[in-house]
Amino acid sequence: MRTRLDGQAQAALLFLLGATVLHAGLTDLHLRYVKAGLRPLLLLAGAVLVAAAATTAWYEWRRPPGAREPHRAPRVSWLLTLPLFALILVAPPPLGSYSAAHTGTALTKPLGFPELPARGPLRLGVGEYAARAVHDDGRHLRDRPISITGFVAASGTDDPYLVRMSLNCCAADGRPVKVALTGRVPPVLRPDTWLRITGTYTPRRTKDPVNGGPIPYIDVVRAEPVPAPRNPYDEVWNG
Image 1 (cartoon, rainbow, N blue to C red):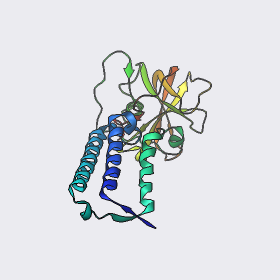
Image 2: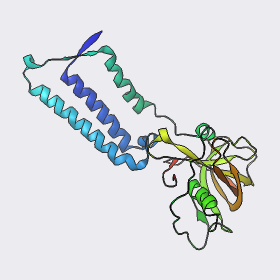
Image 3: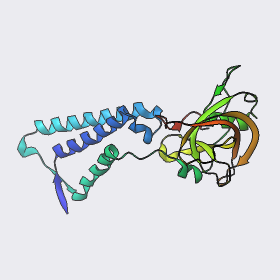
Image 4: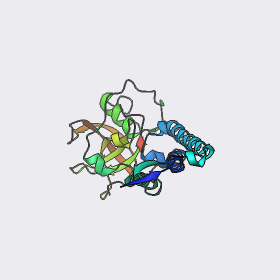
């Protein structure tokens, strides 16, 4: 069965879509779907859609009433509005321990490593620590206090993982980078709990049971729960 969909209704749908995209781009909502670097493109796309809606509405308003010919479209076409409301009202959670446990590590060898401070503790991302530990043999990590932050995931063994998901483009292609924990690991760890780990480099490694990729260890000295970060994804050390 078909219904009539006039230009004003089309303009309203375009405006709703553009406003939704702009809302996502102007808030942290877009971080649930795409990497932060794509925010300008989202804002541009939203602005173009809103402009298209305004142009359509103006064109329809200027046309004589008798010249307006509504288009016939299936009634089901109105269901296109449902994903828009879902985007606004029900944001999906970020990728977490379930995805990490069922996806192989994304750790690859980077083109190079930036300079580290010559002294003092090191505050590194999970991906940077893993890349330096595996592909640089921890040369600049030895005998240095190291702090990394990520969420907990089960490993299938007695040693849990600290994980950060990396993105190439969007959450659909998110893959984990994993660091195994040894040393003073808390006896009870809940998956998806965010921790700040303070520890030291160890040459010990294991293999990811999913894809056989390398997973380095960190020797834990202290572990403390922390709130989930504003952007839960690691967009720098993703190979």
